[in-house]
Length: 167
Image (tube, rainbow, N blue to C red; front, side, top):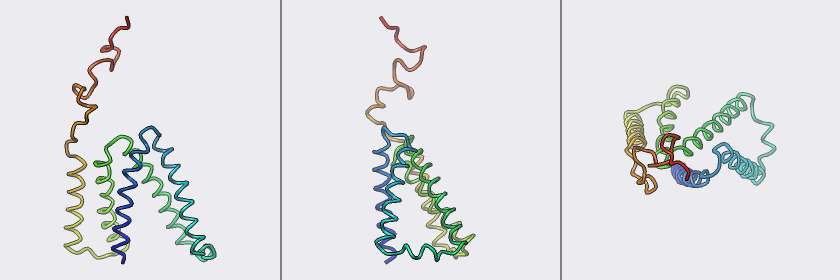
């Protein structure tokens, strides 16, 4: 059953990347993340209330609190960095590169959680990293709006030296 949830999470994550890229077109990345974060808070605490888990809040051990707080801070940092990358790059190139996190997860799980690495896991991680890097650094296709540019710059009016004088 965990496989189904993991695949659904991947599908939802891919959809989030696409929607986020579309949403940050005219919105600063930090503001876009803040808007999503508010919705995450509403949904997550709504789920806690729905499942009647609020009484369990006091049962969480100090060590677990520390791990959860650190993970929360890093999740926010990861999201802010991802939003910044999406605001600059193409979603189809940013997303595979951010998903190199899968390789980092395997490595960190082996080091800190003492999970065993088999040759299949190492080969799979290597293939995932190779594929992500291949996609991320592939030469992008030229967009229609880029067709009028020469050497990556619009033909006129880009600097004070190239601008046409006003009549």
